[in-house]
Each structure stands twice: as C-alpha cells, then as structure tokens.
Amino acid sequence: MASLTIRKLDEGVKTYLRLRSAQNRRSVEEEVRVILRELIEGREEPLTGSAAPATLSPAPTPQRTSALAEASVTLIIGGGIAAFKSLDLIRRLKERRIEVRCVLTQAAQQFVTPLSVSALSHERVYTDLFDPQSEFDAGHIRLARDCDLIIVAPATADLMAKMANGHADDLASAILLATNRKILIAPAMNPLMWSNSATRRNVAQLGRDGVTFIGPNSGEMAEAGEAGVGRMSEAIEIATAAERLLRPPVPRPLAGKRILITAGPTHEPIDPVRYIANRSSGKQGFAIAAAAQAAGADVILVSGPVDLDDPAGVAVKHVESARNMLEQVEASLPVDIAIFAAAVADWRVANAGEQKLKKTSAGMPPLQLVENPDILATISKMKDKRPPLVIGFAAETEHLIDNAKAKLKRKGCDWIVANDVSPATGVMGGDRNTVHLLTRNEGDIAVDSWPVMTKDQVATELVAHIAKSLANKPLEPAK
Ligand code: C5P
Image (cartoon, rainbow, N blue to C red; front, side):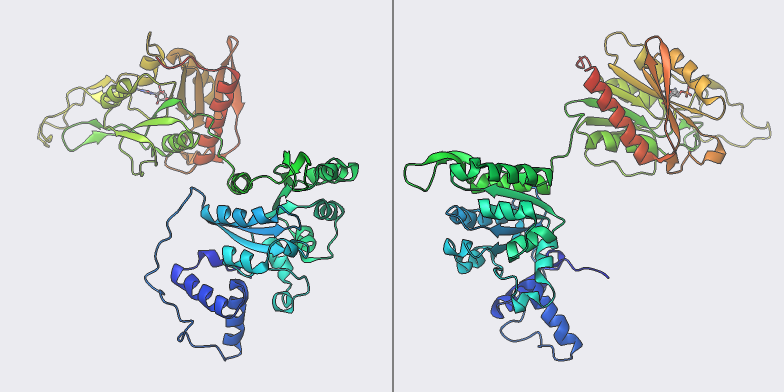
C-alpha cells in the first residue's frame, strides 16, 4: 500500500489542508483521512467556502532557511519546570525547516498549555492515549512512526524510568515503545535525582538501547539555592543535536586535496573531418571525478570527447587530442593526486591533411603514424611537480595482471587499476567493471582483486582506498 507524505504535497494543497484542519480543529493527517472518508462515502465538502484554498496555484516555493531539507519530529514534552524551554525548542526546530508535532504528558500540562504549544507548532497537540479523535486508527503508532526523529524534552526521571523499562501506560511512553525512529532525549531533573543510582541504571540502559542524550548541563536549579548537574540543555543545543541526527555530516576524507583526473578517448585528426578514436566512453573517469568531489576533493577533470554531462562541482577541461590532453594536464599541476583513466591514443597521424583528403586514382593516401606522448609516464617521471600519488589504468585483453605489473614499473606510477576490456566483458562503453588494484608494497607489487561492480562503485571504492592510504601515510603537500 502506498503512503502519502503530506510535507511533499504542493504548497497550495498544504495551505488548503492547514486552513481546513485548523478550522475543524483536527491535525492535518486527520483532515486528510476525513476528506478521503467523505469522498468514499460520497459526501465530500466542495472545495469552496471559507476553507477553500486561497493559493492552490501557482504554489510559492518555500525559501530554505537552513541547509536541512524538510524533516519532521515528534516532540514529547515531559512534566518539569524546563518544559517552558520546549516552547523555544519548537521555534528553533521550525526555523530549521523541521516540522514539529507535540505530545504533552499529563504532568507537562501543569507547566505549559496545549494551546501555547499548538500555537507555536501550528499543529494539533496530543495528550491522551485514548483520544477517540486520533486513536480511531491507532494515532499513537502514527506519532511514533510518521516522523524522522523523536525528541523528549524535558526528559524527566520518571519518563526515563518508563522508557528504560518499556512501560506504555500513557501516550508518551506508548509512542516511545512503539517507535522505530531515532530518539533524542534532553534530561532535566534535580541533581540528586540525576545522580541517584536508579537514574544511573536507567541512563545506562537507555544508552544501550541506542537513545541519544543531549545534556543535562550543570548550573542553578529552579529550587532555591540548589545547583549541580540536571539543567536541561538550551533549546538551541537540542535543535543542533536534532539537526545532526537528522542529517549527519557527510565524511569528506579528501577535503583540501587537489586531484587531477583524465578520462575518455582522444581524437587524433587524419584531416579536418576525420579522426582516429577508440571505444572509451569516459564513464569510469567521470565516475571517479564525481566520487572524489563528493569526498571533498578539489577536482580537475581533463576529458577527451565524450557524450557525458560534466560532473557537478568539478572543473572540466575538454580536449581533443593526446597532445591537447598533455598540455592541459601540465597546466593543472601541481596536484596532490593524479589519476589517468583516459584511453589516450598511442599514435597520431604524422601527415594529417590540412584539407579533407580526396579519393584519387592513385589509391589510398598513406597514413604515417607517430607515437603520442605518454602522459602518465611523463607525469610519473617529473622531477619537481610529480604528484605524490600517481595512479594509472591498464586496460588489457590478455595476461591482465602480468601486463599491468609491467606497466606499473615501466610508467613509474604508484598504483595501477587493471581491467579486462575484452569485447566479451562489455566494459568498454558499459556500466560495469571488474578491476584489480596493483600497489607497490615494499619492493613487491600487491594485487587486490575486486568483485564485478558498477563503474560508480569502482569509483567509490578507489576513492575509499585513496582516503585510507592518505590516513595511513599523509602525502607531502603539492608544491
Ligand atoms: O600504455 P597504455 O595505454 O596501456 O597505458 C594505460 C595508462 O597510461 C592509462 O592510465 C592511460 O591513461 C595512460 N596513458 C597516457 N598517455 C598515453 C597512453 C596511455 O596517459 N599516451
């Protein structure tokens, strides 16, 4: 059965649903259910009148206030004096484009009112496990699962004890027991309650259960003259911790590294309209450029003629011939890492015609070939600007490992990615690749054979190997 995410609906439809649900004092989800029920029973209200959408189209695009995409949180407010800070927490979450649906325990209602919480969250507030309006379809299960994160703030000693022992005798504890979402809790209690061995046991148990804690902080208590550990974290600290759980920072192991990659074939002119080429698609080199960029590297991609879009965030230099490629490679130095994935033509036509060659009765024009510069070997053997890590490719159709080992030595690079490009493998132009990584290992050559993967996976794996090798032995900075 398909599921419907209300926050992904058109802005105009959402506005209508918000208006209608506010008017009928229902949550937006309940309103959708009511509309569907009415529709099935053939007595739906027409989309006119006071609840009609003011802006069904065009929908305004919401402005992002933070880098976080929309997410939703169920916020359980426990019964403690710190509950007043949860009002600010709602605001802090919403300004990060996180939707908040609030649940108040009975004790929490002694400190904050459902009215103030719903006014701030713009949503109905939930308080009762046996509420016929929301429980007609097990609403507590929706509150437990229809969100990306559950926050408990303040988490009282009592609520924590219930969580640690799996109680479900009120709405808050039932949600916490029924959820499969991450839970973030912000404890708040008197310092003696926090240090009590019962609470210590519960904290340890909740930690084992995978619950994330924020705070408590130390400071003055509400009780006159008392101070110590037990103050609830500030709203902004809780919101930041929530944001981190909702969107953990992406690891960027190659941040600060400048990487040069060659990709694609080269075209070697015969005359202004004809050229010698090969079947390379450039997909593997482009995938490596994208993976290195995603890992935080500053990437320069020197590409021969290919039918691929430039990877986002990568500086691409488009070239035609091997000699153009060498020029652009040299102009891009110094770099920390150079990866030569291009299928560079070994030869070019020495006597390329300035005009289109004509068929003549004298027969075919003789094409005289001369060797192209070997870009990989040239860069590997450079004296001053040699990148600290140089990686070549060996595309072979026979004796793969032996030929690749010989190539590693002959060209003077540090690693070789060897792959079998026999027509039967479908590697040339295809999306999959089976590679072996050859690395120099104390005078010997180590061979690491990878299973068949997509070219994107090969790229990610290669970038992971580079990152691991940098972590073990940092490179000398590029000069
Ligand atoms: O000699 P072979 O073409 O098999 O070597 C393959 C490796 O050398 C690849 O890394 C390729 O990008 C690089 N190469 C180069 N310039 C050439 C020929 C190959 O950079 N002219």
